[in-house]
Image (cartoon, helix red, strand yellow):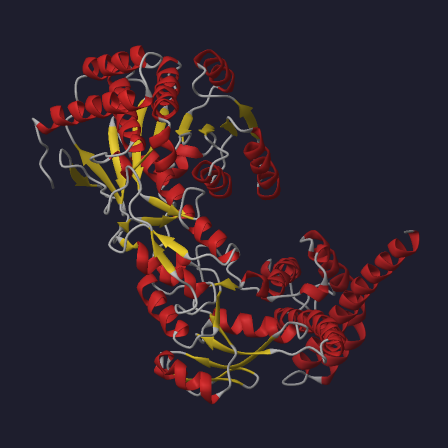
Length: 638
């Protein structure tokens, strides 16, 4: 260890000596350039023989000390980039200003030996920056070349995939550069395609050339014997991305993609960020803008509680909160300790925000009250819910107790404790409900709105959206399991349609809606166009690397409680647009609070006295009755 420390100390000292020497050389050259013309021999002799030997030690010391002052030696030369070169200008400009002070005060160079001519300072500053930059870049080139040669030797026996790049912009250039630096990878970028006419037949880097338009992909794949395609346009609009993906699929080649600009944290592309094209890419969903001041003010320096934090939506919501904002504390509440434990491990890797786990059942009012009182949150995101339609059909009482009574418990406690904001996460199944899940979630919406009247100091908001691709309740994990086990892919109905959004987008929109909504509002997230489940299944099969004639698709028929088409707005509702993209507000007349309370009381009384079928019927009647009351005074659809 001592030897390694000595080596490090030696290298650091060597770097300082090199910089100091370069400063000395730069100053000498600067005097030479300054004294070559229009100065008498006597004056030249004075500068060379008298002033330069006197000031060179001072200038070298001043400039070297400035490098330490601006912490230039905290960065290794081998990692030098444009940013590091720019950082060098700070100490050089700073030391140059100090050297210029005597001239600014009007002192003459020939009358005072320590006064350096302004022209010498300017030339010296430029040369110093150039010399220091070259020294660092040479070191980086040396390390890079040595590493390249080493990797090239180990990769000679490895067969590389001939790869076609889609795009010829900055992202494609960075990716190509990374591939060149890592010859051990199984990637050989042969050519690129781009729709910009000005880029046709130009070289991106080395011999990598743009050979045509993206629409020519089939011909170019055959012409250049391509084995793999990489889409390298992170700023591509969703509609155009889908068109390009479909063109790539027509070649039957493996297609990869770099993340979109919203996922590139540092704006740079790395080989590790390459991934296969996913269903999320095919959905064509635009990234959500969370930069509005209302969202930052809503979360930053606030204590936040997320219920159901171990679930798909709850965990993604938690991750988005700690990634994008700076909450004071985050409480993650869940009933299952395994999912909460898993979330804790993930959070430890991505955030320095303080977070506290809570294991609690939201149906246990007393325990829930004590936990929330202790946490004292400013904002509550309520994501805890049973959500699987067929399972809830078989367990209506369980669905009611968790989705309605659990929601009532936590929403009521929020009001009693004067919590600033309560956000209830609802679903499109609550619109014109036909399933137990839909009935319970619709009743939960009404309960939350009734409490908004009772507890005016708390802002109550419900957010409603459709299916989330990648969540545990989505169809994607089922299809993955079926393909893994060589089973047919199952689809309920050829004419079934659903609204879909990505997991990340759903979490971001919930945060945005919670920040901007008013109390008692039900907010609807713009889900875009409906997606045919049959077509989605075919896309999934192609993305998995299969031909459609290899995998059978079985139609199972709608399950109990399912619809052919989901809705986001009920027949008894209308919508108002908001100033925020993708967020609408339900415009409806809620039943009086006492009617909702009486409905809950009637359902509670029968919990232990009737069978599941009778309870299912009673729940359906109560919710439909409340919805029909709304229908008596329909809202205008704007």
